[in-house]
Length: 129
Image 1 (cartoon, rainbow, N blue to C red):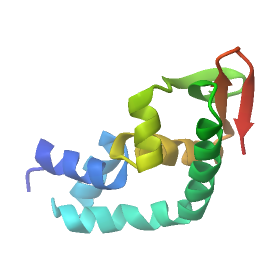
Image 2: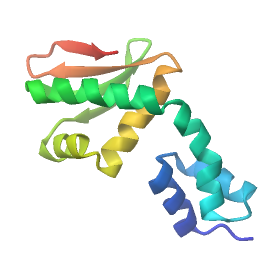
Image 3: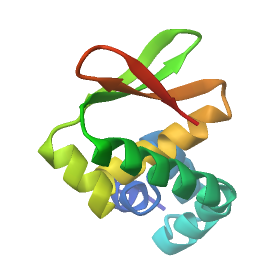
């Protein structure tokens, strides 16, 4: 069965995984989108509570104000950085798809020795644990 780009994008949107992971799940399920999502979901449930806790802590930091950006660091090197603007803040507080995927990815990154930091407007950082 041919795996379409639309099917891969649907799995990515529903699960927050990368293209490669979504495509592999579709290949394993012969292109069945629902089965691919269910195949990926158990891995996501393992980080569900951790992700929710991270979101709650991150929400609190953002609500306190003075936040310039959110970044993921590994071995003191910034591997991902996103500015906190009105759209991102609204997305994080409203659990929109893109920021939700960012937070889930960040939570998964903790297992790989990464840390999530909030960079304040004065340049200081707070680690979100």
